[in-house]
Length: 200
Image (cartoon, one colour):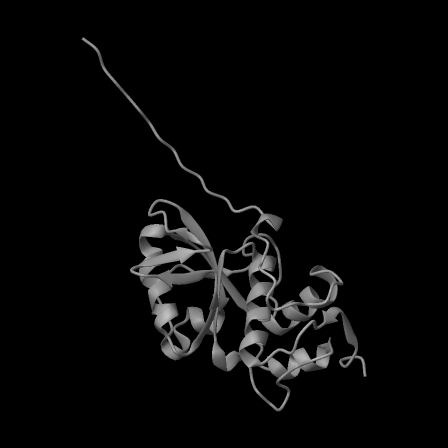
């Protein structure tokens, strides 16, 4: 009964099929890690007769839909290297992803063209970061544990999603069509330009 308690932010404004629930998972990953881009393998969301979900999300429903105890991994990837990774994710039939899209020959990050010199924060699961389901190569980027070096314990994706829905996203009904507000978190970009001249 404790696991089947309603989550405070779990009222659904519309039915969620498996893919739409996957987008909820990705939204929680991006907000909790301040990442612009998120992707997971579709197999991490399991259809066990739950979908479509409607009404109120409970912790039990989230645990049933994401039964594997995988953790998150984050990386800061330079734009020059991001394009190939993003293309691999978009082209993969095994991935759910958010924050990237193809626009003709270009890859956009949240509607913007990739800046080759900018670093983008990307989040995925430990399984995918290791090359799981062939979505990306195992050494495609230097992914690390969330909170590494900050004394923060690793935490399973399922528990993170439950906490986000229950305590962090707010109490308004969850609408899958509502765009993610990127201004709710700071997206860092650092650059340095030096101009030097010499006069004789």
